Length: 144
Image (cartoon, rainbow, N blue to C red; front, side, top):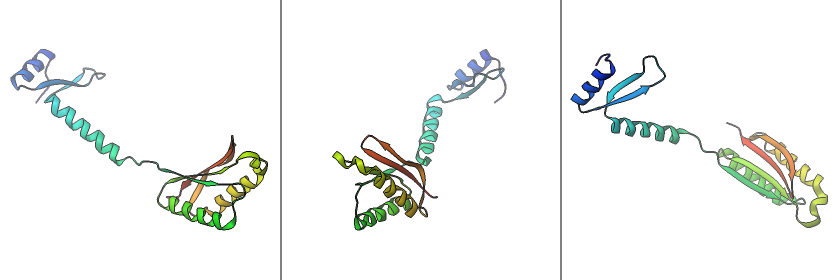
């Protein structure tokens, strides 16, 4: 279309029954375009929606253990953990201490470290086991 001073640009926009839209106000001189503003907004929303759809959503799955979880239950929950990590979900494994079972903190810590070691081929530890209240929590990220 060309480069116009402000008055001429406004006049040209009115003739074409379009809008004069400031694209880059910080430039010297400011950059404006003669376009249909509603169409511009629609296309901008469409681009944002497409970007949002392409963004990956993080899924967090939880697995709960007791401090004295037996071997069969451990294997069963480990199988689920493997499935979650293979699907690309983050895993939050925690040992829940009820009542006086808090005296078995070391067993819970050992259990989570063993789980981390068993899941090494599927995911890597983001946060090592840490006691938060009555829970000992460990986070794992899936391997790409």
